[in-house]
View 1: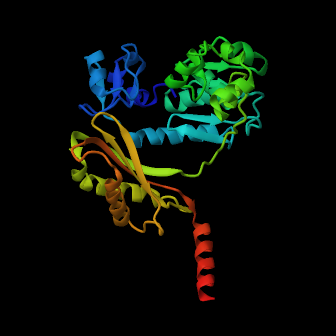
View 2: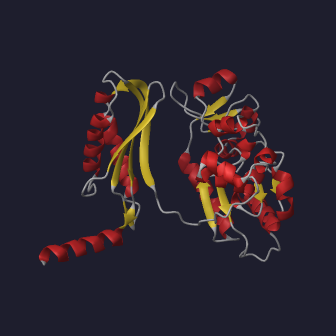
View 3: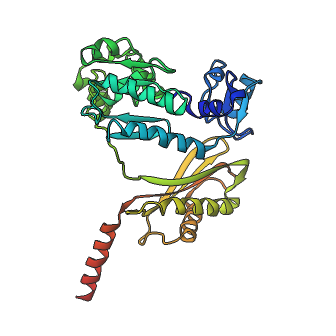
Length: 351
């Protein structure tokens, strides 16, 4: 979707159309959730501090996010996808991979499916979407950004090499600023440069990641579209209006534990085993502490107790101040597995 949250706001409030809209709470600790294309002209981007966005565009209109509304629109869009395929892998509320190798509709090609989906989104939601059509996921992702907003770009199998070679290596998934610098030290700035390196050399330099780089530079990505991913972690976090010492975090941890516990209860067939405490210091250093107890947490209070106790393992000076705290549950396993283990344990003890 194109500038999804901001576009929903502009759709629902005609006075915002054509205006630089920033979806964010105002305040010293707030970050930008989304920016309209009018706001992006001033350099405003998602995840940017709201104060910085305000300085870059003083006349921007700040709108607090309404995730209930965004989720409702996202479900509407997902229903459109489902008319064409059941193989849908959501990445977020506004982005997904679709495998249309065998479409449910009678359309003759993946390009025709993409065009039909974009038209239906426009007609039924009054929003625009951009699509990338390609032989695999990572190429489709690159293609989807190629003609934003409201665009469609197709990379056919025979075009992959010519398309990739002139691109900067930063376009490859997993190649961030640090990896870009490492590759630049090897005189590798474009994908064509990376293609010139042999597999043994890349594996020697980067291990298993070297093979992945070798494959991506050649347009190889065998990862399938996975329609249902098991939950890895549920969590809730909060950024404070003022930095706080570790000793003052307990009421916040307990409040977030309630939210996390409620979210975990929505997992009908799987249960979590590991408690995670996330912290971010005033100077933006992130750290986590986790514990997998002998018996899983059985209540929000027990979750909070364990999370609070994890503070003793932080190991920083007691005067350290924190800007953010989060509480999570991870290590999900199937309920059937725990039942079987309990039965086996009961049989063993009765013998």
